[in-house]
Amino acid sequence: MKVRRVTTTEQALEALAEHGSAAQPLAGGTDVMVQLSRNEISPDVLVPINDLAELSTVETNGGVRVGALVTHETLAKGALGSGYRSIAEAAHTVGGWQTQAVGTLGGNICNASPAADTLPPLLVHDAELELRSSGGSRTLGLEEFLVGRRQTRRAPDELLVSVGLTPGAPRSGDVYLKVGRRSAVEVAIVGLAMRLVFDRNEIVSKARIALASVAAVPLRVRAAETLLEGEALDGHLLDEVSAAVLGATSPIDDLRASATYRRLLVPGLVRRAAGVCARRAGVSSPVEEAYQ
Amino acid sequence: MSSGISFAVNGRGVTAQIDGAATLLDVIRNDLGLTGTKEGCTEGECGACTVLIDGKPVHSCIYPAVSVDGHSVVTIEGISDGETGRAVQEAFWDAGGIQCGFCTPGFIVTVAALLENNPAPSEDEVRIALAGNICRCTGYSQILDAVEVVVSGKERA
Ligand SMILES: Cc1cc2nc3c(=O)[nH]c(=O)nc-3n(C[C@H](O)[C@H](O)[C@H](O)COP(=O)(O)OP(=O)(O)OC[C@H]3O[C@@H](n4cnc5c(N)ncnc54)[C@H](O)[C@@H]3O)c2cc1C
Ligand code: FES
Ligand code: FES
Image (cartoon, rainbow over all chains, first blue to last red; front, side, top):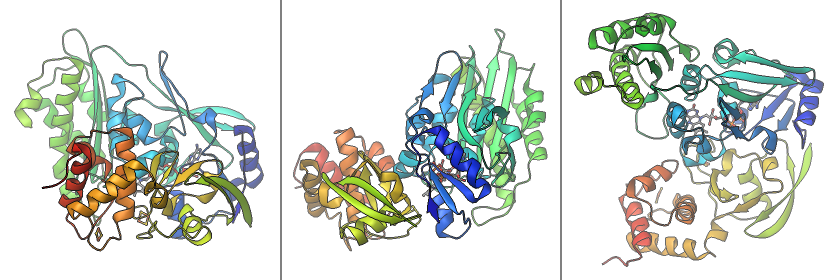
């Protein structure tokens, strides 16, 4: 296996163009290095991109644009601001400090694990990915980008450059809740992100719900979102929302938990998430207290 | 195919020839002979291999050696030369935070990094910082005691 050393994004793109699917971008390496040692991947050429400063910035004027190399540690510290707490919360649960200091947002996205923690919160913020090749750039919604377990629409010659997020809104709240076997360094048994925007009358004007570890890829549940939009939060409505979430997901049995256990977790997570979103949006909600 | 890297280890400039997917741990232990850093799981799970890169703790067993080119690495050998590191080592000794000792270099590197960033962490902050380090002997409470000894600046009675 060769290493192709680059110092600019353009050089990295040239290397990818030259070697195509035989090349593997290497960001923090927390997935790549483990997959290499388990012989799960066998690229001919590694292209380290960890020092490309251009991909390491966060812009927060108006909308938010996050460079692909921004680390979980930076995100967990709240670099995106108070409108994106679900992303900070998710980044804070990615492994321990050593993993967060090295692992990047772009790596979490491109690795496309069903359990990737930052993906549900990125989905609820309508993340748009900027993909670049030596031929040019394109923008793709995260939902469309994710195809299946560890499968994405990234072309072999493309780098993920940055992630654009929808601008924050007044009276909005977001949250990421993760259930694991222990409280730290644990892969999600279920991860749920929610973002709710309320109008002046405390009616939900926009809802986003996305989950990890309940299907081959993290996914948004539109049917559940539609149920919430135009309504005020109440316990009965949230039961319907949970049913819609369960209808749209296909959890599996694995060594971490049974499918049945995963399904049992969903209603509690939905109610708690809705309560936290309401509180963070500054909206009075009977939901959280009643169900916690 | 090998590739040359140069970086600082414990303040000293070094160069190494590495193979494509060599890990930083390989280079530290095999090329540089710094065997204080331990190899446990080799999958980023246990923290025995923790070193600092530019002041941040990383699992050197899954850190690509090529990526440290131009950066600064501190291993347990370098930590023991610093004031914070010495204090942490002594506190582990005093509080019984060491049994078999295999996890100890990793813990001490991580604790030293925490205290450099935050000299007075709460117990919660200590627990969170140490979540990526596993000890199968002590049950952790003596390790938390050791950190408390350093933070409070007090000797244990
Ligand atoms: C001990 C441990 C615990 C972990 N815990 C969690 C956890 O709790 N939750 C979780 O979600 N993940 C977890 N992970 C997985 C991993 O840390 C994350 O997925 C991380 O975000 C990957 O980022 P990276 O920079 O290390 O990616 P890399 O390993 O460098 O790359 C991952 C993949 O993305 C590709 N890639 C990376 N950057 C780009 C780019 N800019 N453009 C195109 N392709 C790119 C690579 O080619 C590779 O296929 C854990 C890993 C370890 C070792
Ligand atoms: S040996 Fe590196 S984390 Fe276990
Ligand atoms: S002292 Fe033995 S593993 Fe920690």
